[in-house]
Image 1 (cartoon, helix red, strand yellow):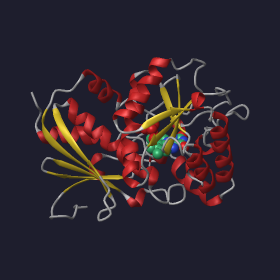
Image 2 (cartoon, helix red, strand yellow):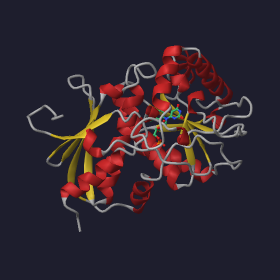
Image 3 (spheres, helix red, strand yellow):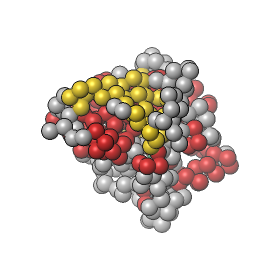
Length: 328
Ligand SMILES: Cc1cc2nc3c(=O)[nH]c(=O)nc-3n(C[C@H](O)[C@H](O)[C@H](O)COP(=O)(O)O)c2cc1C
């Protein structure tokens, strides 16, 4: 039996806000009107130093849109996604409209079930290879949403990209404005409705690794540990570039992350090289033959860590009251 709309929308929105976002900023708002949910970028929550153009925020909104759709699907609804933004309304990133009934597939149910378990795992990974079948599953997940995953070990770009991560991390550590923004969002108490608490961080590394997680995400209350030497790294790309491609990349990223969760894999992000102009230009050059790189994922097996909290749905939801203007 199909459940009544308000309940289904409530569930879909609860799933949407479980999406990942840079420093758990949750840069989204949702507007509901009849059988339509709009996903808006919340400019107030875009990182002004690390993400001045809202690129990472649009990835996060795309991920939230994907969670919405997958949740509607398991409740028996087909959903049409119109991906924006268009120049006239740059902050409206996606419009999701119910489109009749359709039974969910087993694969969709598996992904929907992963929505509330997926989390970023910044702890050391286990010394266990990701098998070819799981790698292929992540590649197919990206392709299904119009994205692409390139693994760095096979493409031979591993050491160059790892060195760009280290370079960007060093540049950001030297930049007081960057450090202040990261500290504002990452030094939260457990239970904070946004930002990253130390409970979601990893232990300090013993020594310098090939791949460097963000220093702002280290939990110095934990004893130092050795990190894996060469984790599997995957770059998510799209053929096109620009705001529209970023929303699409966010949807592809979320299908990849949920597929990874369903496969029992841990994932985390290495976004530092996307956030400084010089390293970002190098990334664009390195992947010029493949497409536009959007994000870099560290993938492997690990022990699950704590989920971070989210703001309540009521704080990010409004109902349309006028012809074009979302109510606040
Ligand atoms: C576009 C994007 C970039 C991110 N970059 C990083 C990063 O560089 N380092 C990191 O540890 N986490 C990164 N994250 C993960 C967020 O910090 C995380 O999603 C957020 O804190 C919510 O936690 P959760 O993913 O465990 O639900 C990124 C997330 C997104 C969507």
